[in-house]
Image (cartoon, rainbow over all chains, first blue to last red; front, side, top):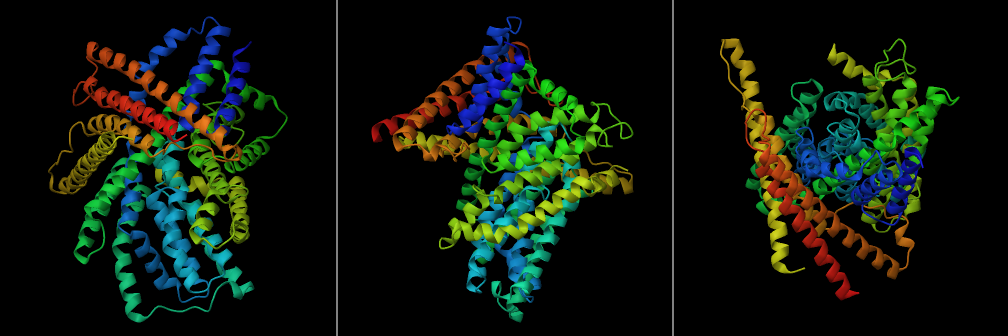
Length: 461
Length: 165
């Protein structure tokens, strides 16, 4: 039996184990080790014992990674921001400006989701946090329940792309791209999403005024307090995003400073009986332990699995198959994106990045003309580095789309569960316009790669 | 789960959290020095950053990352695909969960064994960080202890299930 066939069996085994609810990291390690054992039986020159020796340092060296420290720091930053109630300040602050328009509170929720998603880096956490903050307000003001939950489920997806995002970091590490360039590339597509979502709300409530009540501007004093409380949040979030965008600091210092500023501000708020208590900090540290532990284990699993598939020669086989197929490059990428949308209905975004991207990436490189293809000769008219960035942005948008796609749509689940009395179907209906907008956004970036590549090109000179 | 083990696991995760906070402090100081240096250059002066900063972060996160594992297991935080298994009968789900816990115990002990050998190799080879020159092997110890604790937590969860089931 050839290595490629064993690799394909391994891939099948991985999906079976995942379907049996084996944790993603564990399934990857099991298939990786089991697959290498099978390879050693079928192909005696691939001996199993020397393979095992890599476990002496593999786990430690996967953890001892400077770039990866940013993941833990961003996760901690997100939890501290949540515990310190910065999400509420953000929402109320944006609402002070947008609340005077019909649908303004929903628009504020989108703005706050974008801001909080930037600092939190996780779509699910953004959806659940902003759901807790904004949903009661939307319901109190008599927004249509399905519209309110739909807005928040869609708004939650903004977290995955708006930098700094944990998913962007993981993607960059997997394909060996620059984290900073990924962050820079995500800025314009992220802003487009926010503007499109806000525009969609404005249009929807104009067409169907029953979905949103007449605007109720905030009282003068309430507005003043909301704006005052928004300023420090904007300064903290803005410092991180601007610093990264302008290349003033790299992701790890940005994350470190972000945690530091939120800690200082959260402790300052204690003077007013709010902000971060010791119990709150402890709670954030323990929550960080759970999320980081989960991510590091999956990353280690991906490393083991990658070793198996590489030894089996599977990525090269897929790449040469794709290269020999009659499909044009753009069609292949569209097929890949559709596959990601379908998979996104069943798997969480991080697992998808770690399981699927390592397969797709070599195929794209092969189609593009290899690692050293230049923009003039490459099939996608861009070199491998730009291809990494462009495909990363596209695939992350598609992956986030899975969070609002039936039948699973994790964001829809979360928001409907938070609302309690809103049916999943109603939330899915509320999400449909935003789903359509996302498809338009994907098409735009697919046809005009400069949308993603403009900022990294500009800043790299 | 025994209260003492629960306490140890939470404390171990908090210790990893404090290591993370230490990284935050060191990173902030280093970045502040970096920024101050840019200003100082206008006055023909230099302010040095922390020597070996990246080494420190790398070694500290190597310990912290693995120290998160037992608490993550304690909270059943390892992500899984829920879609299909929830259609299985309760009995099948319980059996699957037991199998997962056994596999977790075996994997954690397997990794602990190989990592112990890795620590001995790192000690014998004088493997160290490039700038600080700190030996790598002591930073394997928290990882090995974490893997043993991880196995212990999974074993306890397995026995809990057996009692309940």
